[in-house]
Amino acid sequence: MTDNYAVFGNPVEHSKSPAIHTAFAAATGEDIVYQKQLVDEDAFAKAADDFFAAGGKGLNITVPFKQKAYSYAAKLTARARHAGAVNTLSLQSDGIILGDTTDGVGMIRDIQDNLGWEIQGKKVLVLGAGGAVRGVLEPLLELLPQHVVIANRTIDKALQLSKGFAEMGYLLGCGFDMLPGQQFDLVINGTSASLAVELPPLPDDLLVAGAVCYDMMYGTEPTVFMNWAQHHGAYAVADGLGMLVEQAAESFAIWRGIRPETQEVITALRGQ
Image 1: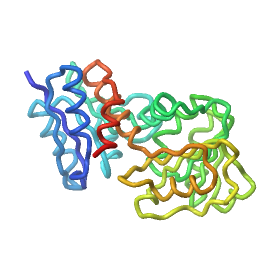
Image 2: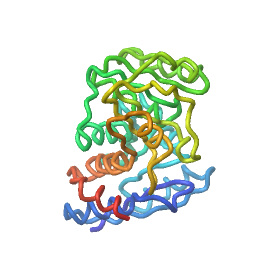
Image 3: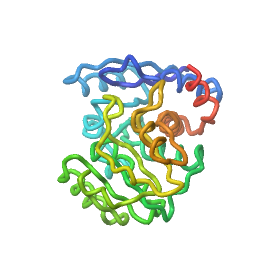
Image 4: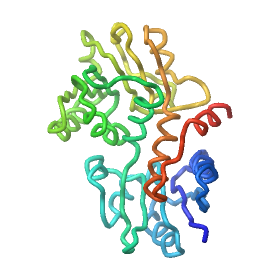
């Protein structure tokens, strides 16, 4: 019997998740259907109830519902609890809905496995202090960077995050105005500024020789942050398309117990 999965979001029309999971299913021989569903902002719980009541097996959750999915789940994984957000819901054999987050592990897999960049012992700067950043801090710190600095327009949010994850590694919060004089091996942009074609105020000498830069956002063209990095001496730059595919692969593995290969899917999406 074919199992049903979906992505809930608002907006959701742009979502690449159905194409990604359909490709995974074809490659692994798993019998699933995966659709996208536009959900009213105040109707998340009812939409999720209806989906699971109709026999649905699992959901991906995108903006703006990751906190609502966190509250909806009857049980949470440790990494979802730390992230304070859920992007994957799955129906367990005992009927309980489990909430998990795959964003952080998706980004780390892309950076380490696909791009081959080192994190251990490196000085890492993360731009932004919103939900996207919170979701990647735990797996980032598990790889033992020398230290991680979170820089944000409002310093309070950066300090709050750094305190919340302080037990996991050497973590500092600061405002953008405190970046001059600091240099980094890896800079990760977790702000949505790229989508608005804006850039946080970054000093010209932010990057050490051989530094690499990663934007969690992606588009058909290089983002404004990627362009900045290339013009300021970055050894390599990447966008978040690989992260999108890798977090989807992690969700697929949670649901189906099989990890799909990702490289062909990333290449196909790049070519669109």
